[in-house]
Figure 1 (tube, rainbow, N blue to C red):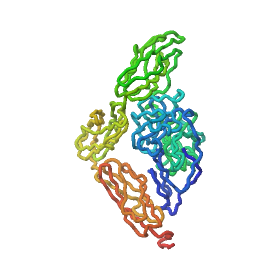
Figure 2 (figure 1 turned 135 degrees about the vertical axis):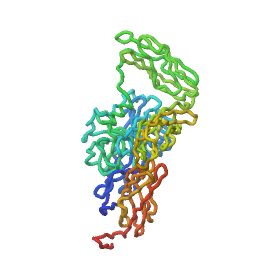
Figure 3 (figure 1 turned 90 degrees about the horizontal axis):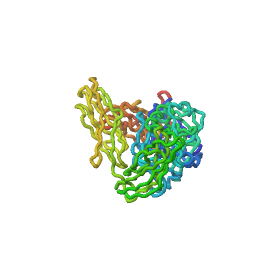
Figure 4 (figure 1 turned 60 degrees about the vertical axis):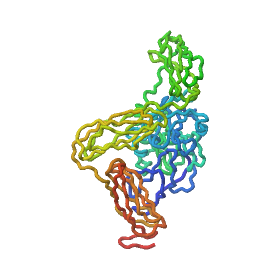
Length: 626
C-alpha cells in the first residue's frame, strides 16, 4: 500500500523520439499516439520493482494501518523464494470456506504457493513456526479469457485444501456480479486493502495489513497512455494521477471495496506506481464467472434447534481414532430429522457418524479416524446438523493430530479448456490443460497420444505443479488429413499415478500452405536521433509455433534495446525502444532483430539506427550543427 504526491512526464524531443529512462517489469501492447509511446505498465505482484520514471527521490504517504477484524476476508498470499518477508507475494479475499478471490497474474509467480490467514502483521507467521492459519493451494483457476494483466480479465479463483473460518465467525465478503453493474461508478470512494510494500524500494520490509481510500475516476478520460490501454469494460481506475495515495507490489489481487462489497481486484499501474491504481472489474461477466467458480455462498437458514459436542476438543495420534458425542436439542417446531456432517478436517482424517442422521433431541457418536499420513496440527472442525427443510445448526470441535507427517500425494485430475478445437491446414490452435487436486509440490508431466499424422503437439511447459496449467498448441501441417481426432492428454506424477483428458481436434479442409519459418518486420526500418535520445519503432512477427521471443544484436556502445513486450503472440506487435546515451558514438548502425518461436524457428530483420551529435537538428535538407 503506497503513499506520496510526485509527478512524472515524458519529454518529447522530436515527433519520433522521446527521452524515457529504462524500466523493469513492463507491458505495452498499445500503439503510440501522436508519436509518443504508451508508458510501461506493471502489475502489483510482490517481486515487482517500481521503475524510476523521472523522480529520483520518491517518498510515499497516504495509507493507513488496518486489521483483519476490519475486513475479515483478507488473506496473504506467500510463495517459496519470494523476495519479500515470509515470501509475501499477493493479497486475496476469502469468499467461501475453501475459495479465494485474487488476480490471475498472481498464478504466474514462481515457487510453491500457499495462503496465510488471520494476521495483521505477516511477520508473525515466522515461516510456519509462529501464528496464522496456513492453507495449501489445490487449484489456481484463471479466467478463461485472461492473457496478460493489462489486457483485461485479470481475475482468478483459488481452491485451498482446508476450510478457512473467518475471524470472529464473520460472514464471507460478498463480491459484485453483473447484477451490481454501476455500483463502482466514477465519483464514488472505495477502499483498497493489502499486505504489499509501504515504500518504493521496500526498505522497511513492512508486511503489515494496510488500507487506503481511493476515489473511483473516469478511466476512459484519465487512465490513458499506459500499457495496453485502460478498458472500462474490464477495469476500474481509482486513485490519483500522481499516486499520492496508491497501492504497491504485494497488493496484487487485493480487494477494492465499495459499500461492503468487493468490486475489483488489484491488477496494474504505470511501472513507477506514481499513477492511478487499476483493478480488475467484477460487476460484469468477470464477476459472473467468479460466482460460477465459487458456487452458492448464501448461508442456509438457521433453525432454532441446537447442536453441541462433548468434549469440545481432543487429541488423536496418526493411525489411531478418537470419539466424541454430538448432542442435539429440538426447536420450537418439535423433533425433526437432521443429517450430520463435518467440515474443516485435515487430509487423512475421516469423521464417521453413528448414526448419520438423528431426530433432534437425541445424540450420535462421531469418530475421527486419522490415517498414518495425517498431518500434525490443530484443526477447527465444524459439525453441522441439517434438517429436511434446509435449516442448520453447528458446533465446533478442536481436533489435534500428533505423530503424523506430511500427507501422501493425493489423486489429481486434468481438464482441457476448451476441449474442442479446430484449425485449417498450415495453421495452429491452442487450448489450456488445467490440473486440480493433487498435493503440494506434486509435479505432473504432460504427454499427448492419438495425435493425427501431420499434427504436432507442443506443451508449454511440459510439466506443471499440481493446481497449475499448461498451454497445448496443435500445429497442423499442410499434409494433415481433414477430419476430427480425439487426442488424449496424460498427466503422470513421480509415483506413476496418471490422469487423462481428451481434446477433440478438427482439421478443416483448407489447402492453405504451412506457416513456414518466422517472418519479422520493423516499421519504420530505420530511425535517427541525437546522442541521449530514444528512437522507437514497432516490430511484428509471425510463424513457427506458439509465442515469439524478441532479441536484438549489433547495437552500438552506450545503447540499450528494449522490447515492450519482449514476447508476443503470433502476428503480434511490440514497441522496440533504442535508448542511446551521450557516450554513444555518432554514425549509422545496422541492428539485427530476431524473433524466435516456441518450437525454435527464427526470423530476422534489420533496423538501421543513425545517431547524430547531441544538439544537431535538420531543417529541410540542411543539417544544422550544435
